[in-house]
Length: 189
Image 1 (cartoon, rainbow, N blue to C red):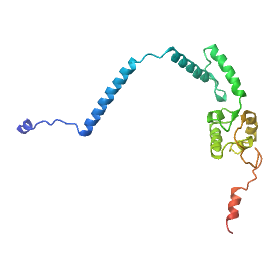
Image 2 (cartoon, rainbow, N blue to C red):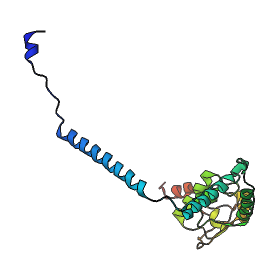
Image 3 (cartoon, rainbow, N blue to C red):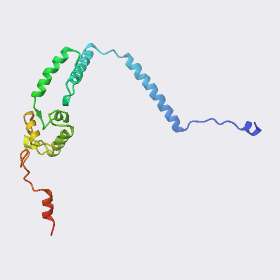
Image 4 (cartoon, rainbow, N blue to C red):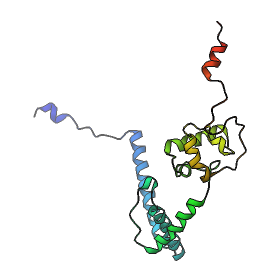
């Protein structure tokens, strides 16, 4: 070592103002987190009513998971006989209940036979942009619903909204002039 290296003092790194703020913030977060843990430790445990309500809710979720999925896929059967008997009436009532397409969610619409996720979204988008269907003929305005699907859906759906003014029924040809003819008619020759 040379004499100049021995005389040079070592510099200590001092935190900047922003680094000090960050250290204070981390310290406050750590202390407040510890305080919350201590406060929660002093709270009494959940009562029997809370535990029973939680058990009922878990049972409901498990019963829904045990229902068969759309397109024939089945989940593993429930291990509890009471759960199986509880889902059978639910399955029967689900089939007999009409779906109100003026108020149904995407999941409810998708549960209808022949309606997939994209068609359900189109039905919902049509309802949101044009208002309630009001009657079955209003549903026929949705792209993808033809006479065959309309016949399949007719006994399964209902409508509670106001009627839309329509000119054609399901499967009937449209009475409006095609867009290309209208554009050609306006152009000067």
